[in-house]
Image 1 (cartoon, one colour):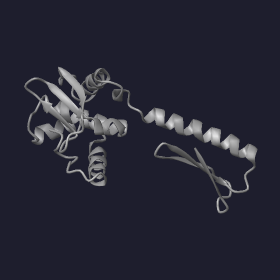
Image 2 (cartoon, one colour; image 1 turned 60 degrees about the horizontal axis):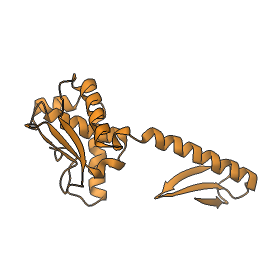
Image 3 (cartoon, rainbow, N blue to C red; image 1 turned 45 degrees about the vertical axis):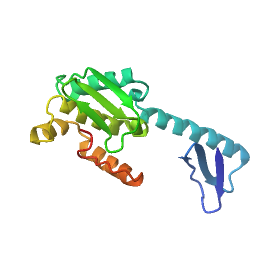
Length: 174
């Protein structure tokens, strides 16, 4: 953890993660007791936020399958039923892949760190392939049932660009 005091900061306290380090920004004139109080408070707040963001699907292949079952029920009328869903080592050109013939879905471990709503989009995308193999209008109509589709596509395209990957958020998950 790192505490940074700032003469320009008057009353606000801010915290964020820089890699594995918690950085807390506080006013320079804050007392030691106030610093201890605010550092502990900001740690609690950040932990709550991180816990809310963590998708239980990240835990295991079984949790990923359970999440797919829930997403299929919610957005695809429960009609997309994968035989297996599993995490796989990072793929070069895809976030995930689906083989409709054997009803398997493979998800790149690169997605273990994305926000849950992004992972959910990728799973809905792959589940839609269990109903429609091609990226046609019928397929996209199914995917668009997920309300954060456009936002998630933008996130994935930004992530791909930032990491120097050649993965599109639109169609590389097939």
